[in-house]
Length: 385
Image 1 (spheres, rainbow, N blue to C red):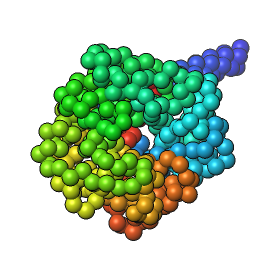
Image 2 (cartoon, helix red, strand yellow):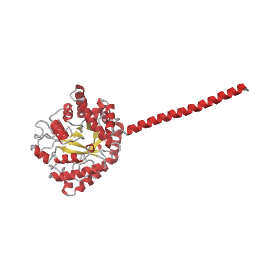
Image 3 (spheres, rainbow, N blue to C red):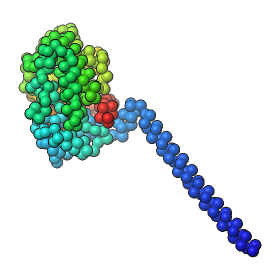
């Protein structure tokens, strides 16, 4: 009998210990879950700048440099060539042209595939030139906006916002997240400017930016510091705008300055032209000029957002520079993104030139990180919604 009591007590003790063990495991599991939850909350409570810093710190040098190049691709589907450019060089953005576009449904599939197969830590910028008038894409399948000159000639400022909203919605539906518009130039030899009057341009550009902001699509003011007085198409060759700085500041640059003063710099790019402005820089075109991009645009005007070059394959710069050095010189002068729209070979040369420059110390790590942080911040703010 006594032996049975002892056995019974032992059994009871084992049961109690087992129960305590289960409870302890639950407690530990609960504590682990609480810790994980706190870590998640802590992650969610990070400031946008802290999140940017974490992402940039996790990136390799090649990944960082890829963020600073935006390319055009060939064809209407992701193929081996375009996939190689994205995966080998970590390109951070793609610009689409009519050669890539057959229908809204096809473009939507293309942009979805590009995003899915880029395998980067952040999404791609996917851009397009949908200004209106002659500068539109897939005009037979989309309702193209009127030219900016046509909109401006109505005198109805609200039309600029209305068309920006319509355009933004149609682009977003296809997976496009950047529109290289509105043109902020004062006057032009074609229909790309709202007006020859500076204040009218300001009013219409301001209205257009509000439309893009409403739809949360990134827009791009162009072509800094203004090409309205230009006489030669920069697609063909270089030319100079020979007027005093005071004239440029009061007329051509004022629309850019107004938007810089009024709008969040993380909502838009500023695209820099390839023309020369001797009053600002006697030697270099704007897209290769530290006096224009850094001294004027960054420091004097106070712009803190992304600076992107116009297409580096345009004759104004391509006829006078090699592609290995052109991207290096643009970044050293202050550009955050180098745009190369057409040939894969040229895109590779620009990227490899940047890589060589960083490895040799010609471009500092600090300079690269400065641009990449701007890019990642805009992507976090706009491409995850």
